[in-house]
Length: 278
Image (tube, rainbow, N blue to C red; front, side):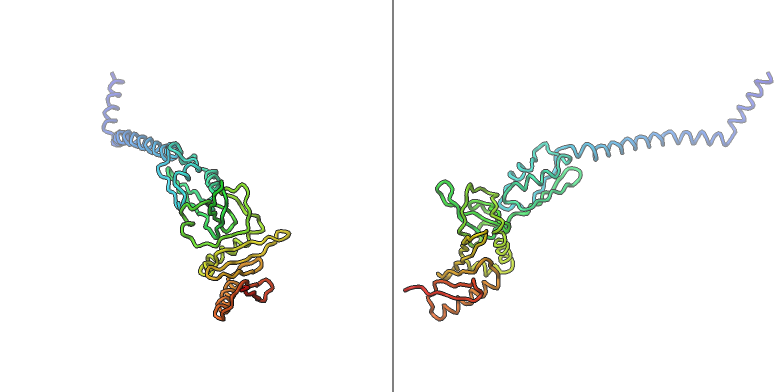
């Protein structure tokens, strides 16, 4: 009997214990809090799983192509290997390399925007000179850039449309196709034409034809044919802004004097000329 009484007393004392009651209240509060934290952790893990694992493997949401000048979007997508199944994770450096196989493209940059879009920035080749080529019994215009790359056959819009370009003659083509590169010894000429196109386009527009006269050991000389003068002008190997300005000045002076000019020669550093036979 005494034992039971003691137990009953202790139970009464526990119920009236403030510390015990506080523990019970804390336990009641902590239990739903833990459930909320667990639920939030599960939701966060799901979001991270979707963002970093699932979304990058899903089909691309946006493919933004900049610099489409004379090149169709379809051609770019085909060369890049982008279709309805392509994903953020499938985009790699090989895509840019594949796009450089398009002759009209000089440079390309592929930028990935996480998690489901990419941006393709294209730099097109810019023509500095034109030429002609016989293909299947027909004559087509061809276009060269500053690196001596024949990047287009025929007029297909873009930078070549309506461009006033000097015509390069004296070249013989075999198995001509877009992407053909001219011999390395000719590259200085096309670099000079590029410089003139940027710094003095008004001078370059006065030349209708540039004839390449091949010599020994990859050497050559140039003969220019002005737009508004029947004379031919021999200038050696280099075509520069100063040389063109001097050439045009002499043409004007001789024309004012009524000289029936046949040829103007700058190859020796001192200009000389020949008169047309009447």
